[in-house]
Length: 517
Image (cartoon, rainbow, N blue to C red; front, side, top):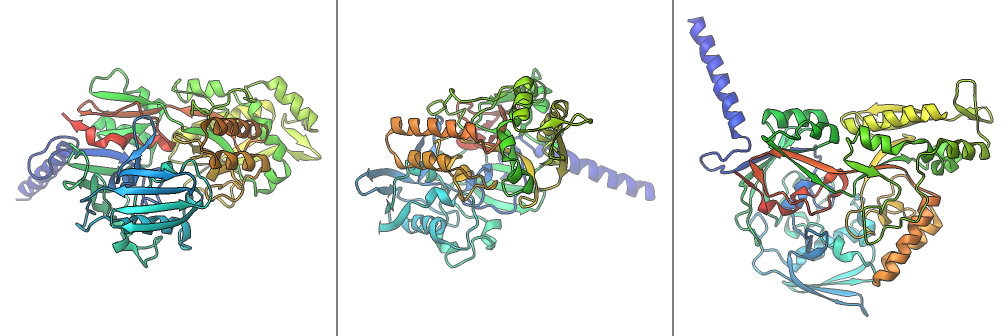
């Protein structure tokens, strides 16, 4: 009797396992239709103005504008718009018949509510608020017409109006940081929220009432897998249909016809980011412009990035319209490094590490434990530094404490308008300036670039910004990464013409064109 019981249990487990495996990435029978499983980072909330470089909010919510394949803002929730430069007023003519996922009508009141939240809600804690600070007022002319008036020019405003619009009827009067909406989001986008198994998965389903082209894929499972190596393992096993993989992991799939490796250009860079409120960097700020000479960046690109990237020197390096190539690039040169260290009064001690006034040149860098590629980069830089006389200790941590760390291995990007990824990151006191970097010349040129609608004048301002930034950098730049997405060969429709952002985000910009064979 017991043997039959055991046999029944084993058989049930096998059937369940087979059902789980065959359900991923295949056109199943019944109501689920085509299901895609996507390797995802973890979430604490799903809200378009709180999650600004994640895939999920971009397909649940939609903005007045959206990005096309060239990274240009084009109409989305708006059918058309006018801009009166004399009065600095945008007039948006909204689409008719757009519905929220709960069936309510989308109107101009929702646009006003979202922009008012970004400009005047004191409870909001978001890194992007400086992108909207020039908005003076938002006026609802009628249910399908909204006027956005600026107090000062902001040449990147249309880019910032790609932000997902939030529903006034669900969030008015609520604490946007803590409301339950952030766990059960309602948008107007291509997919609607279905469920969230905390720490495991988030499921969305095709929005059959979407106003634009409806997706081919009926359901997407965002499977929470923060660990880079685990993502590769699950793609290989078939548990995941598509994942962004680091260069080393992606290399193992090349040449295997069961998988497709999509190589995207990205604006995603890696750099050493000093905390400018930390006592070490307050005292030794001048080292930031010197240490780059001791890093063999090309060796990092060739080894850790498997050649899928390039040496970095500017935060606008991937923006072909605004890059300034005529700046100090701090190419690897130990002779130059030692000369500059000597000029600053540093000498090498008996242990080979530089000292000055009895202090060893020693600092720490924090890297999150699940970001294996960043850990490898930090370790290689540490080894190179040690050979050059610098002690940088790598702290591998579960999460970053932005207030106490000395240095961290940052990733960031400026993939679209050059204001987006520079102003909020480097202007003194700006909303995304986590490192507390401050430089008057950088402030002046970034502000001048934002204030002008003349492309030639903006180009000159950004060239000057890059020149000043190169002289007194906020970061010690290392490398730009290519974005490698690996998928089952059954997944089709990804478009690599789109430059991706930080964390190689933006791959789902054309999710409505994806399909599963």
